[in-house]
Amino acid sequence: MSRKPVLHYFDGRGRMEPVRWLLAAAGVEFEEKFLKTRDDLARLRSDGSLMFDQVPMVEIDGMKLVQTKAILNYIASKYSLYGKDEKERALIDMYTEGVADLEIMILYYPYMTSAEKEASLASIKDKARNRYFPAYEKVLKSHGQDYLVGNRLSRADVSLVELLYHVEELDPGAIDNFPLLKALKTRVSNLPTVKKFLQPGSQRKPFDDAKCVESAKKIFS
Image (cartoon, rainbow, N blue to C red; front, side):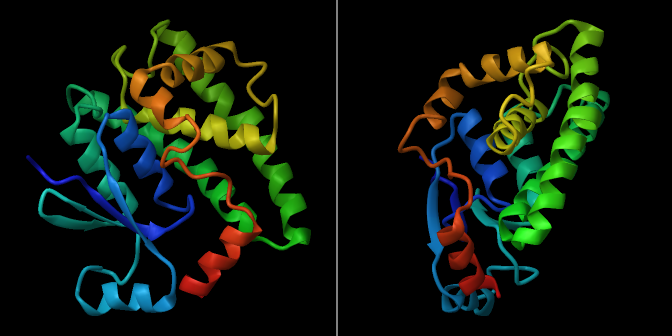
């Protein structure tokens, strides 16, 4: 029996949350080893576990993978969430990169000053409602299928639904005018593996609150 993947990061969303979502959607159980101090991070660096001295790092199939995109690509390929051919993978990459552009703004938001947050939140709301959500709504409307690519679940659907949840935390009702996105969110959320992940007590992480932000700063600053 193969060993469960082991995720090395701090106990917060950050750049590891998309990995948690994708593993959960694939139905893969995983373990987490949380960094709590600078010394924990230093130990990973000193023992050669981190190629670029950075986390996230995932131990999987005998490898110690770093760089979030590389980790996600491997998981998606391994668990058939990456399309059937090069064309589908190109579309999946394009849609996922669009998600990442907005997701990174949300990732940084909790770590900003109060003055910075006001402008950032306005930008997040504007880009979600006027740039990204209309684009994905258009894709779904163009082919009339249940999922973004190939009419089957892919990492693009998982990352987009994760984004929808995160945007709605900051901007409730953000997807009210996008019926196909709402339907996709419901459809993916009702998949048994995802439904389990969305339940209280799962390994899904809550929005990074002040305590989480301070914990991250103690490790990485």
